[in-house]
Length: 205
Image (cartoon, rainbow, N blue to C red):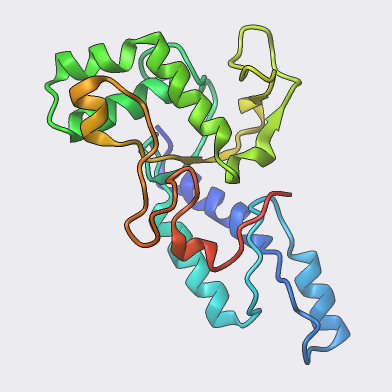
């Protein structure tokens, strides 16, 4: 499990390079260059380059960064992580187990639901279908690693920070179905990051 210092470093790496759109409005060339130099892998592009907006973004992102595979959070993948498999190394197993326990399943039922290969594959497909995670999709993954039906997977060796989509809890616990939920704010799919972060125009690289 990652310690606080590691998580803090990941936050720094992710937020050091905020891509600021519209920086040319009323700003000097040097300021614009500084903003451009700040572009990074997280792909955030606030329309308002003010420091207050950047601080707000950092706070919102920080509250959603979690050191485990919790659906509804950004997960900084780590050494040894795999998408399928079972137990602590499996991102999908941990996520589904968490949902099942949160939905009232006892440990035995949660383990049974999370261990099912078809359900793990379904959740891995949702992870790959997330617009935010599309920046990490590649065809250059090993034959023993997860690939979608279109031949794309996520290279976890690059330690990407992944959006973990929320699934419909009752549907999963009661019927074993892995399906994305909807955001209450705008009825959009939880394959998308939360609506409040979309205000900052999160974009893929």
